[in-house]
Structures are given as C-alpha cells and as structure tokens.
Amino acid sequence: MKAPGSKYSPLYSAEDFFDFSDLDQFCAGHPYTAYERLRKEAPIYWQSVEPPGRGYWILSRYSDIQYVSRNPQLFVSGQGFKASDDSYERMGLDIDSAMRRILLATDGAEHADFRQILQPYFSLKTAKSMEADMRKYVTGILDRLDGKKSIDAVRDVAIELPILVLCNILGVPESDQSRILNWTNRMVGVDDPDFNASPQQAAAAFREVFDYGRELVRDRQLNPQNDLISLVANAKINGKPLEASQTDGFFVLMVGAGNETSRNSITGSLHALSLFPEMRRKLVENSDGIKTSVEELLRHISPVIHMRRTAADDVVISGQKIAAGEKVVLLYGSANRDPEVFPEPNKLDFQRSNANSQIAFGHGIHLCLGAMFARMEVGIMLQEFLKRYADYELEAEPAYLRSHFVHGIKSMPIRLN
Image 1 (cartoon, rainbow, N blue to C red):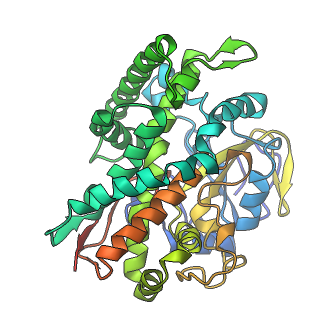
Image 2 (image 1 turned 60 degrees about the vertical axis):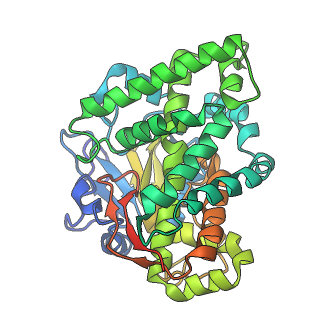
C-alpha cells in the first residue's frame, strides 16, 4: 500500500483488514483484536481515505507512539490533531478557526506560552487543595443513591463530579452544569445519532459555548475574580491580549475535554472492576493503593482513542519512511495493550510494576493538562463508591459513543448490592 503523493513504499504492508474511518466498529469500545493484528502484521499502516491526499499512517506500537510524542519538532500538531482533516471544517470556518488555536492544535512558542498561563490552575498543588471539595462532591452524589437498587453508572455516578470540579476551577456557577453537560455531549458526540442528527446540530453547541465564554470573558475583564476565567480574560502573550479564536477554543476545550475524559475514566474503571472481581477485592481491602490502581485502570481503559500529528520533514520510524506533510495517527488504546511493554496486556493487574508508563493522557509536551485532576477524581470516586457498593454488578453491557476519538460510555446499568 503506497501512500498517495509519497515517494516511499511502505516497509509494512498488509491486506486492508482495518478501516479506521469506520466509526461503527468503535460502538463496542476499543477494537482490541484489530489493534493486536495491526501491531503484529502492520504496526505502521497506511489508511487510504477519499478524496486522495487525506490518508494517514496509523501507529499501533508503544515505542513508535512514544517516539512521535517525544519529538514535537518532527511531528507537529498545528496542522490538525484528529485523523480526519474535515473534523471541524464541515461545521464552519469559525469553529475550525477556534479549534486550530487550542492547546492540542498548537506548536512551539504559541503552545508553550498559552500552557504556561494555564499551568498554575492544573498543578499538583492546586489539585491537592481541591481534594476536600472533591470528596464533598462525591459524598453528595453517592448519598443520592441511598435506597436505589438499579442505576446508570454514567448518569448517576460519573457525570456530575467532573463538571462540579470544572465549574470550581473555571469560576462558573454550579447552576450552569446542566448546560455544560449538554454542550459536552453534543460536541464530543458529533457523529453519534443519540446526540446529533447532523454536523450542523453539533456546530450549534460549539457556537453556544463560544457565546457563553465571550460573555464570561467580558464580565471578568470588568470584574476579575480569583478563577481561571479571570486569568484567561486578562492574560497577555508578548504584551497582547489573547485573540477571540484563542479564548473561543479555550472554552470548547475546557467544556469538552475538561470533563469528558474524567467521566469516561470513572465509568470505564467501574466496568473494568466488574470484569476483574479479584482486582476489585484487592482495591476494597487496600484503598491506600488507589494511586497505582488508577494508573493500571487508565492503561486498561484508554479514554482517548487517538491523536494525530503531521510530519514536518521526511523521517523514518522503525524503518518506515514517512514523507514531510504526511499524517500519523497515534492509537493510545493499542499502545497501552502492547505486550512488549505490558506483559499480559489484556489483564487488569494492580501489581503491574510499570503501570505508570501508560499513555492514556498522551505523552510529551501535549500531555493532558488536566491529567492530575482526572486521576484524583477517579481515585476518590472509586474509594468512596466501593466503601458503599463493593459488590455492585453489571446489569447490561455499556453503550459506547460512536467515535474513533473518544472512548466514551453513554450508559451502563449496574445493580447496587
């Protein structure tokens, strides 16, 4: 399989056994069987896409994905962070413009300067200062389950905590959490008919978030407070205020990625623990080991399916030549199940010595800014939930988001015992 427009022939080739653009194959979660075959037969695999010129290389091995992630000068994010070039183009130029200015889609000084502005609100110190609030939120959520036998783990357990934490960090009223949830589902579920009938419907959610964010920015410019919105509203880079596209993109990223990843990590952890009851018992018996357990759970779940980079120059990865301008897609779920790094990768094992090598939140300069908060939210929720419902059971398999970007669970009925 030769890459269109490429002067190179692929070192690795195989029959066309995998079509990453087929979103339906992700409706049952990560297609781990396909990942395994990719790693074995075509670890650097050319995905043809129509029209010609929009294809991309798919990387499935941990070492290759780590190499790309550690070399942002060779593999840039500024030409798009999703496999499909038209992910945002199809929703409108204003949306595409904003999404090109978010942290995930910027390189070099622009990325470093903006990340430095935000970093104080996402530090370990800040996360630890919120631990008491997180436990208070979790207690309130779980108290409402008293007397119930059957619940939905997404709606009744996982959804609210990340949004409450997000509202706290940003400085927005908790009364707006239902709006934030609605926007999150519509923006992340662009291609899921349960949330959007068309890209235009999803586009409306983006524009509602833009309007909401602009209103808050204007307010904080006049009435600054001790919150992240005030910081962004009054921030300057090289002496200049942030551009509208930057603040628009910031709000979309916070509202979407700011709570979706944590939600899916919580629900995914409950699902994984139901499949490995011996690990659940270990966690119940030793809740102090929650930090290591969360790392292994994140490895097992991989709540983000992929990120994309673009080769800035001709480069060779594991013997395969990638031409300048060609795209590479990083399959995090495959890397986190690579047996070369994680023996018996499909097994959940809280004794795994290198669990913290997982790359569920990315790697390198684009490591998820909110990863520290997500880890704490998952850990606290699991500790408190298992104190009350150590013997919960799945009543049905999870319903997954129709997406090859977010490994999202839409619903998961469980029985509280």
